[in-house]
Length: 261
Length: 270
Image 1 (cartoon, rainbow over the protein chains, first blue to last red):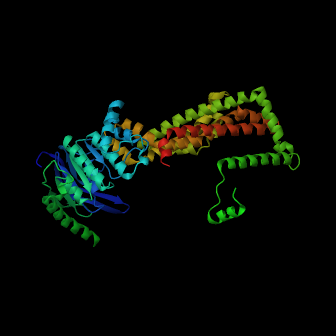
Image 2: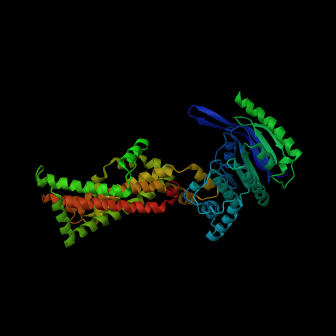
Image 3: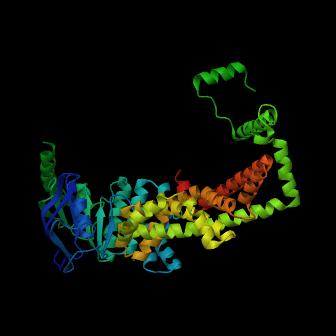
């Protein structure tokens, strides 16, 4: 997908100090992401994918290199992105509705409107009936959906998602995939998501980035030229899908094998 | 009714059943009555009545004070000093705890001084408060407040430091202002710590008030216990101690009630 670069990741590196040793999470990472592009980042677990999202969100500062977001380097918390972290960060003292409406509350939108809007997305993520429940009363998958609903309602121009659908059953996963694609298209969002699920990556993304094991570097970039809008259920049965999937799978398997050695 | 055999068999397979709520209350009442009987029996026989008085005299003293209404004046004075001192100390302690909790520079700046003040036995400040605030209720309020203040401050401060950074980051990404982060994330999150601080400091508010009254006063339970002691009135001392204990329990009950209301999500999670 052509377009002006929304996010430019330039020579990015990140190391963490743990006691006396340093852990290198990311090394010389270069990637340009266009506006409205959907990027899937895939790679061995613990390879630094989450670190990358944290840096795009401005929560971590790079050790080397930089991230340019819409022309300016990310230096502080990037409030133009919505970030769905791997661990759900719902506020435990707020019920589902108040959690989902939280960003609207912060923006000063009045109670009646924000609750109406929250209830609309609650329906879309299939959480109706749970509006007044507290996060501790929900299953892991339900909490993830609440986080997703919150991020969608917030409608940030860029959505970062860290293994957003890992805890969902297959049926619900498909519904969420469909929802994500529709909302991203409606809100003209740029999406960067991390996943372990190759099927999910190929289904949703315009481009799949395969990372090496830590320190994460780009092992392979694969454009997914499947037409949009995509039918998340049926797209996987097309021969183009199968070809792309197999190519990526081969490369990914090589990465995983290296890890095991 | 189960036969003894059945009971024995049950014992063999499973742990003995816990006594039910009503049953336990009966046992507790029985223990209380037994203690009163032993106390009455020992008094004047094994131990001089002068030292331990006896339940009947203590009961008479309580009844007398209740009937002539004099106990209520003292009780009210102590309750007033305790609650006012508690409130002032809690508010200042909580505000200070939150403020220092979110201001790393100020907290590091003040750290040695706060440690010194905290290490100081606060009751030693009593004479100073008498000088500053006089013999009236103000000096008792001040002593109760300063005891509460440090406990609430330390707990709130710890609570604020303990707040999940992910929640703060999340709110900041959602464009929360610094003030919104404090009021909508940090304070609610630290609330259980704040309440733990309030909870433990209730008895200290009472200690502060009673102690203040003992040092210089003409009313309040502290005054009454001091006065009774000075009169060698052991029954009076015991009577006041019972009133103070009941007051302390009543205060704890109120704190529990408020806490349960404010923390539904925690109760729900159990």
